[in-house]
Length: 113
Length: 114
Image 1 (cartoon, each protein chain N blue to C red):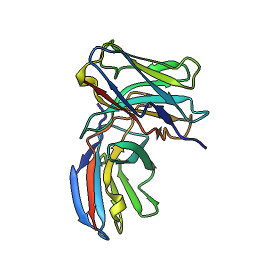
Image 2: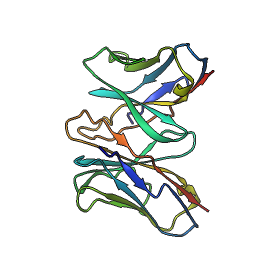
Image 3: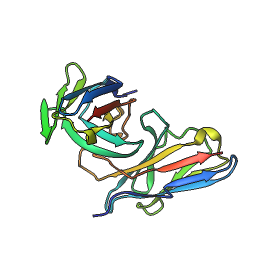
Image 4: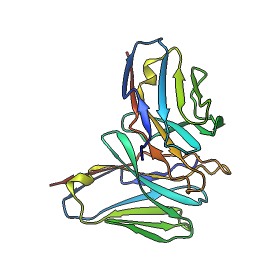
């Protein structure tokens, strides 16, 4: 199935450092989304990058997409303790117009004050 | 405007009982999705609706699970004869047509089956 797989599974950094999370997927996509989740509830949409885009910025977030390698990365710059959360990439199902998202295990990010 | 809401926020039930979980999507969103998430895992797709009809119910684990969206807005996920393995956070999301399928999630319902 078209599951997003995040790497690393866990990441611990100091406040102010940058955090990079990677995502790989299996087949062609139209777009890919990144979400954040705090404490096992409330998934929050962070950013969507389309297949014809290589890089996209939103505040302290930078997302890249390499469709030739079927991979994406999320960079959080100047991290803060409040960035502590799990981060998921969500490619769509590869079945035609199916809109369901297929999720991996996520990256658990801990930002230490 | 209001986001996706889910009720109840927590539900504790006994094995074998019937439960209903409700989702109110963002007004005007035609697509509605149900996922469930166990501790330490990513969300697992269950079913999604386009309007009133289930466009894909391939994620429902068995026939104890059923979902409806009779008027194309509110949806109810129904679980019969609950089992301890059904314990999870049940997440609902909605999206509108033509927005690249950006999905907006509710806070979830934490179901605990004793």
